[in-house]
Image (cartoon, rainbow, N blue to C red; front, side):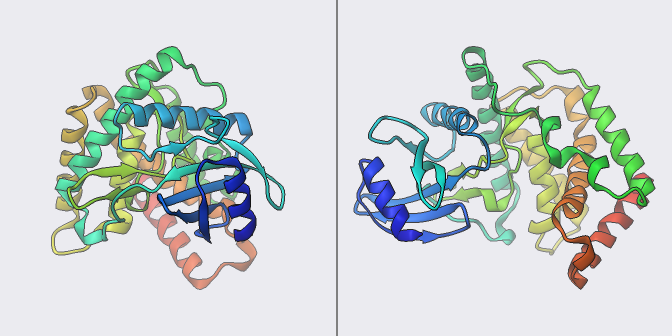
Length: 308
């Protein structure tokens, strides 16, 4: 497959690639004399859906938002259809500078920088939507991953009731250009790169969607508490410090009303139920590992204790 990738890319793009290494089933790390590139070859969404996503990202990059640059093909296309083992839609990204920070370095300084980039992302995206209405980038509630009652078993009655209540509360929130638009949807330490100067780049917009902007603030807070807290202080103090830093940075670039900020706990709850739902959607219930059982029981206990 790597040889096929190199041959197809060299035919379609003005770059002579020399190596290709699989990072995932859909992403390849490719090198050339001009540098390192990451190539996504997938049909995870329609071709037109990927074109809309690429146009959005390209616009963000031109407006100095911290996102990777997309390399156009010989025909100046941001998305090329390439025959590999099957017909794939291909996007070539120039490698962004920086590294995935170790969790011990996810502190207030980083969260303030992240907040600035999210604020700029939302502000620029609002301008983008005024001239480029989206059709193929779905609204959050159209995703099967938010179809909680379809995947959470009927036997888990308490959490199903909690999930239904949360969904109804979110859907009833006011929706206008100041509160709702294009978001990344999955910002956490694995989807950000930070260079030696502290410049931050957001990557992997595969979960980009139309959603309430505040959800892009809830996800990194939630994920930091799940994956990035390195100890050494009270975890509630850590949550308070990163939340304040994230919001402070965000407000330097974009408006955030007091009303929507007060809804942050609701969106943290939405994210937690989202994660629990994904366990039921993607894990094989008949063949759960001991670790999967432990995690699922922990989430169930936590949700039922907090909100039941």
